[in-house]
Length: 231
Figure 1 (cartoon, rainbow, N blue to C red):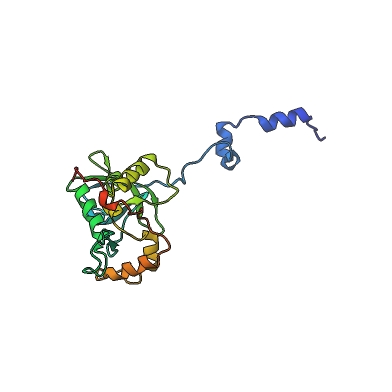
Figure 2: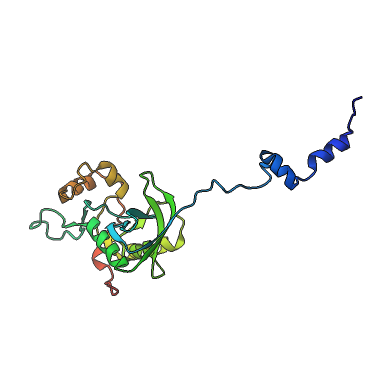
């Protein structure tokens, strides 16, 4: 003889909360009722002394690991910028070249010194290199690079107010690369054919002449830039 359950009984059975025994018998039945973070990525934290590879990349010898400063960008090592203060054009055939890549690396090296650096990985780039927020003696290294003008925020749609404030301060003071005429790094990476250390400044002068975009501000008042007092 078949038993027929009332609609109320069926509804009560559906909304009845799961018990511990139910979880053991049918763990799939709990999907949507609670979050399972077991598959969430766990990013590493690196600590120790580092070596500056370029203006945005550090090397941990003890881990044999490169780490890239997240949310900022800097000139590549073979990249050149130009000094806009081209005054005597009769005696000087072209603006003076500025090695913005090596200068960015030098400032990163000076910033970290011999002190230990802690890098908390937050993501991985398309090339597999960890991208991290790195600090030394409690200071954000990316902020230090922005402050002296040898790095820029990585995206025009960046929303970190602190980073933007330091960049705008450096731009207003014509610090670092903001005192030069420099091609946007992403365009440089796309267009530069020769990326070796033997690259000549004329190559980047030609790229700037046919640029799609540059990151330098106008230089009408470049010669009136304030004098640095902190370096």
